[in-house]
Image (cartoon, rainbow, N blue to C red; front, side, top):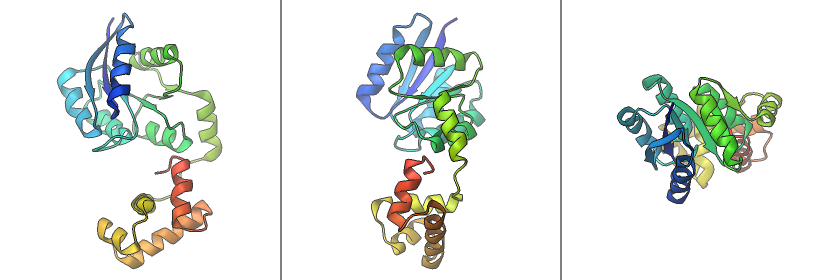
Length: 202
């Protein structure tokens, strides 16, 4: 049985290398490649892949959001997150989005191929060490709005700019920032964003 693959990776060199590498497997066929997260669902609908390999950080929408939409709108296509970022928070969010697997990019090629075959057969594939770390760290303590505010302040935006972006009052933004700083045990909002990002909560 041939396993049809969709590759979603914003870096063209990596996308082409992955397509070439996976094309060497006799039971794989790369049927679509895209460089943006917001192109994933249309590509899945038109090419009918069995498995979509999704990078997390892509323009448009990220791979986690794309996995959630695929799960809802193209359930025959199973998602496998392939990322540089082996962070516990990302793993939990990937599984919550309906992804069937989570593999880091520095995994050996044979491990990736095995993960694809297992996901295609309906199994769930998660790196055991990362799964254990996720259990230890627990779920993200941030609410959705606290996460939005921290994401917005990554580029050192002012409170007024964040409020404008998110259609919130400046007082509400300050409240969310205070809560996020307390929950991450940070000294300021920049450190809170860094801690949250390092844990995969953003």
